[in-house]
Amino acid sequence: MDRIQCNTILFLLIIQLLLLYVNLSQSKDNNNFPNYAIRVNKRDAQSGTPNINNTVAKEPLKCNGDAAICDLRYDQVTYPGTHNSASYNLEFDCNLTVRNCLDSVSVCSKQYAQCLMTYGMQCDAQTSACKQRNPQWLHWLCEGFNKTCRSSNALCTAWNAVCTNSDRVCNVWGNACEIDVPDWIITCFWENNPGYPVLRQLQDGIRLFDFDTCLLNNEHGVFCHGQNPARALGEELDTVFQVILDFMNSNPNEVITIEFGDTDGDPQILSNYIQSKLAQYFVNQTTGHSMMYSMSDPNKPWITLREMINNNTRIVVFFGRIYNNVQNRQPWIHYTYEWFTESYRYTSNDMTPEQLTNSFNGYCATSDAVIRNDTQLYGKVRWQTIDDTVGILPTNIEEAIKMGKSPGPVCIKDLALGINFDVLKNIEAFCYPRFPYYFRVRVDHYWQSSLFEVVRKMNRQNVIKFLGNATSTNSANPT
Image (cartoon, rainbow, N blue to C red):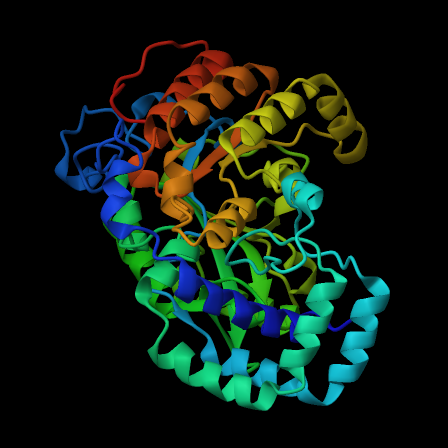
């Protein structure tokens, strides 16, 4: 069946259920995790590295705040990152939702027949808990909830009833989307970094950014979170890139990484647009110098942070699924999957701290096989990552709705607090010794986490491993 059109109607039903039954007990937020005070964790007290022109001449260079890592190659350093870095101040793309909704009117019967035939249509992700319960009346979908479950005959019938009257439903939803959807819905389920824009992340010490992008009007891209009818839109690329450029110019000893991951819209138009904007902001139009590093020969080693700083090639860009869609691709765009393995590949179904821990432990226990396979397929050992995130557990919400009560802690914030401290430390302790390179540690709600502590520990170990030097001149800073 047409998933976009069917998902549109399901998305509307789910939002209505949330508005009716999920009050998320905002007044209890501070009591959900009493062991962790609301505090901002950041790299150090300074907003960035001081301009070298204002420092004492004999003071050693500090790369990303730490002199000890300057002579590590780029790939030998671990970087603190955020998940869906531009997911703040989002708004639903109401126009797209209504258009997709209205487009489904003429195909209701066909969709219903396909739904009955397929019965158990597969969505983006699934959970064993939902499979075992196999509820007939509620099925979660969309990136907003990060997981979806299986459909059933009952849902097909319910969807058909709504679809045949979708003209009215879509127009009602259009009004509700613009006016009635409360801000906490988006903050709860869509915003990974609410109140912490990219500038604040840079100032706090985040050095790796994960950007999702969506195409608008088939012309230009914006930062976003989600896909199809469930996408919420954020800032323009110009706004964020200008912030990054200004920060990098003011902080000449900082090296950052920008990753472009999930997208929604025509991949060729979107990838070309992103490339053009990167060139506009980070390639000097007068001299032609690019602040973005180019790996000229993938068979040669990466250069050190010191060399990147001296050459002012301090931004490294990776494209994921849209890499092969870029026309006239520039050498400063690197292919994500050629260089590192995203842990989300083996943790995507995890919805609890226990599941996340088990997935990491199971994968890291097979490190010898992973390394051997990488060597055979890629001719090198790819870097590993710790993406410390879990998805929303549909059964918690399902049971709460049946009982007529609040589902409790199901927001991104609550889920992050459950894994951002001890779970993250335990994953690092078990996995780090088993692989030669750990490229990034990425979390939601980084300001309430052990992110910088964990990355600082990993980089101290990196220095010992690659340089044989256990002494850091600035042990208070992670990178």
